[in-house]
Amino acid sequence: MNVASLIAASRLVAQERAVQVTAMNLANVNTPGFQASRVQFSDWLSPQTGAAALPGEKQIAYTQDRATWRETQQGSLTQTGNSFDFALRNGGYFTVATPRGPRLTRDGRFGPLPDGTIGDAAGNALLDVNGRPLQIGAGDARITVAADGAMSSENGQLGKIGVVKPSDPMKLQAEGATLFRADTPTAQQAQPAVLQGAIEGSNVSPVLEVTRMMNDLRDYQFTTQLVQAEDDRIQSTIDKTLSRNT
Image (cartoon, rainbow, N blue to C red; front, side, top):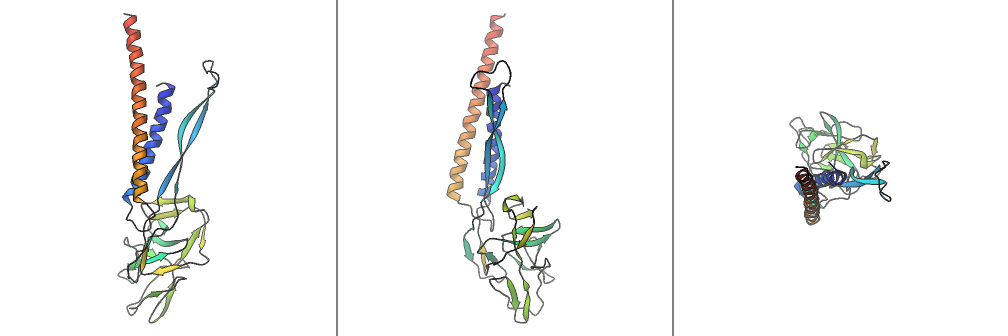
């Protein structure tokens, strides 16, 4: 494969990644707490030191998929009236206990499990400020949660919802649509703002994502045509050379 085809191939790989990320965003438009992802491309410069290198063409720029980052702005809030639905009006994340260890999330759809533990739809327990599962008793019927996360019932205080802030949000590793693994230290949010009876929607804008998808597909098709045209040119050159030598 010649240099032009290699450059185009690197662009194709990057565009394929962009399409995958945009498709994931579109698939989670209605997923509570989902945060849209974006890809960041950069040039990977390859020095040309051979004798065949032309003046002004001492480097070849390949496209490199450098990183994927998330947009962390808050999604829209929807009132549900459910006592175990919680939304965060400021930054921060809830912490849930999974079989793989603690994970962060902004998906505030919780409910009581059979043993009284408050957990998410997957059965992961919601943790308090001390990293322990929050629980309610059989006699706790009216659950209220203050803005600072303090949870109470008619029988008294039950605990305080932990709202943590990672030291570097960009280093959170996504696990599925709404869970994140924190590979950097976390600390309790200084002034959490928990809203009971509401959930946060995704921060994905469907119109913008569809526009991005159309642009990504158009760029992918254009680059595919370029690769095909270069392949046809090479094949034509080979055929003419063989024809002259026969």
